[in-house]
Length: 155
Image 1 (spheres, rainbow, N blue to C red):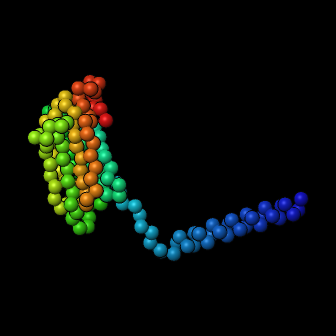
Image 2: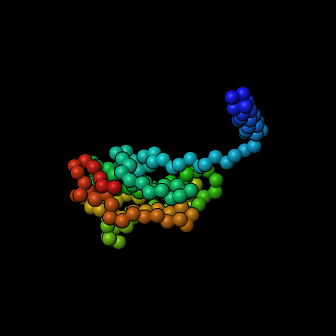
Image 3: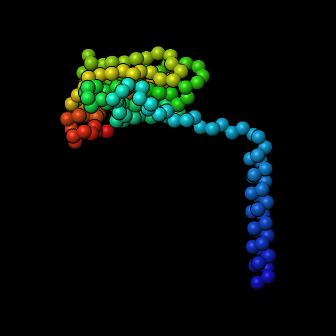
């Protein structure tokens, strides 16, 4: 019985020592890169627009789709995770499903976001997407107002 107690005490002492060493190493001032903060929709589309969908661009940012129920307009904004640093190629686009002539887009070198691009698409499905530094994402035939329950948009 004494041997078992000594083993547990010794194991607890080793765990405490390891924790202390970890704490010392963590407190040495070595910088560890923190992940970039995720992009957040901040009403870039304007008053009355509410975010209804989003599409992540891994390690780069997010494309946001917003809708204004009063006007029937959709809006797309592509935001980078970090709004500092060198400008990157960023783009946003939206169109009524399969209606290429309705396409609205904005592309360029931006430090924070591209857009907003607006489109009247009340009761219509929309195709939308964005790009950051060559990484392209898109969704097709989404947020169809006629298919959604009153007051809501499909995702």
